[in-house]
Image 1 (cartoon, one colour):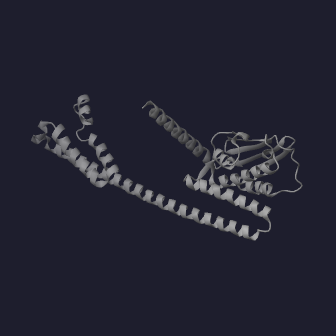
Image 2 (cartoon, helix red, strand yellow):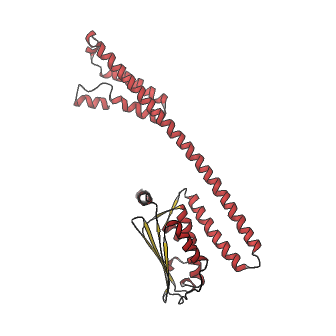
Image 3 (tube, rainbow, N blue to C red):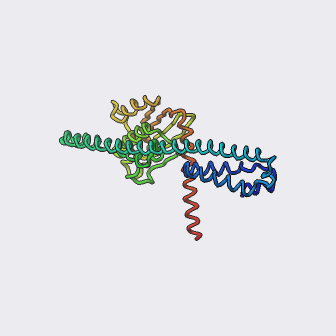
Amino acid sequence: MVRTGLGLISPDSAVFAPYYSATLVAALVGGTPSGVIAALLGGLVAYWRFVPPEWGATPFLVEQLVSLFLFALSSVVIIWAAESYHSLLQRLRETERTRQLFNIELAHRIKNSLSSVQAIISQTLKDHPDVRNKLSARIIALAATNDFLLQSERQSASVREIVTNEFAPYDASRFELVGDDVECPSTLAIFLSLIFHELTTNAVKYGALSKTDGLVSVSWKVTGNQLDMEWVERGGPKPSTPTNDGFGTTLLRTGLEQFNGFVDMQFEPTGLRVKLSVILPPDFQDRSRSIAREQLRRRSNIWESGLLAKIH
């Protein structure tokens, strides 16, 4: 059909050229056998349908043979290139499947290790329930983030997902989340999940969430490759400045060092205010935007599907 259309535009169009694309597509999709069949059929159809009758005369015999030879040679090159690409793609798929199996096995072992650690802690600290419960809760928060990354088959998680997962057991109306979808590498995602777990636990025991009308606001933004976050509590009891650093404060200060970050904790009369900043990898901002666009596209597709279903 393409060759016929070209013939209507330009009667002197190359006889075999439009069939190269058919050979390429067939070889990419179906491999070498499909590419060979497409090349043979393309050559036969072109010769039968588009070779002028005068080509059968002796003066045109050399030109005819040269055209057929060039088409055959080009088809061989196309099929070879397509087969090389096809083989490479197959190897990449097999490598990806193997990697996923290794990741699943590794995650399974990590989960079992965390369960063993939790059992050891429970047994060792059975006479110290407060310490035991604190450690168990922290291990559960760490395991939950690992499970989240594994189940979503991702190497990253957005700040909103991390915070939402931590706030899930509580009343959603008591939390305010402000910020765009910012993807964090897995190491940073795990660190933030532990931080938010500590802040939430502290808010439930001593801060805004210990009162029925207390509220927690979490905001974040990206400036260049720096992620700035702020935790603000309101409506709880007036906080008192601690005399020494607890586990949460120590985790914050030491953990932020690996991300070239810093933290500022202020015990204001209205509640605790924590500001922290971390440096994202140079290429992670572009990846975050790509993921956000993909999420927007998926939401749009879901919305369109729902709309079409209602119409039908």
